Image 1 (spheres, rainbow, N blue to C red):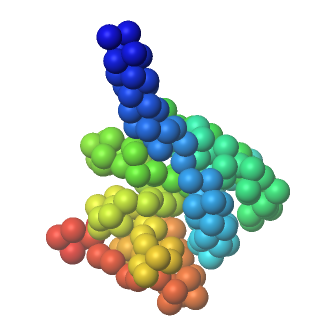
Image 2: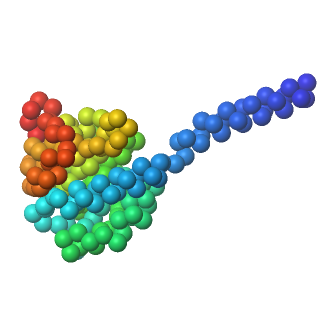
Image 3: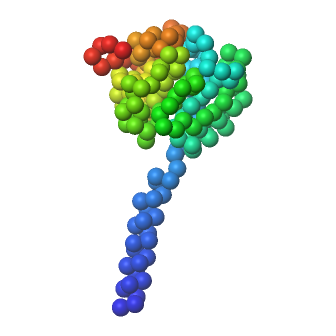
Length: 179
């Protein structure tokens, strides 16, 4: 009887470990690749003005922010050094770029009408986000990382994306054909 209880206890411990392990961390390699893409997105985008003396790169996940900051800390865009911030309560005020990860996309969409997007480049990684909220969205095609751009959303945010970057992207339109 004691042996059966120990086996059951071990079984339940192993079950809990197997469910917790995959959710514990993000794929660091994936975000290193996305960081390289984002560095080029910034190089090929023009802002009317910047929120401060630094290029403020905002993310809603601490772990992803740490990965981006380790990969992009030595970059300089438009003579500005990037600063990396974790945005809480869906407030992207003073951000120049906002990265919306998969796990927080639904919450950001719920606050979409409250978000001031003037001079804010929004990059996401969830299906449908470029039609509803973001300017640039990552997606996978044939096991390769690709991106799509919504030019009407970009224009409505007073940003300009270079035609060279647009040629590399899949072009999308907003839901309903508007912004």
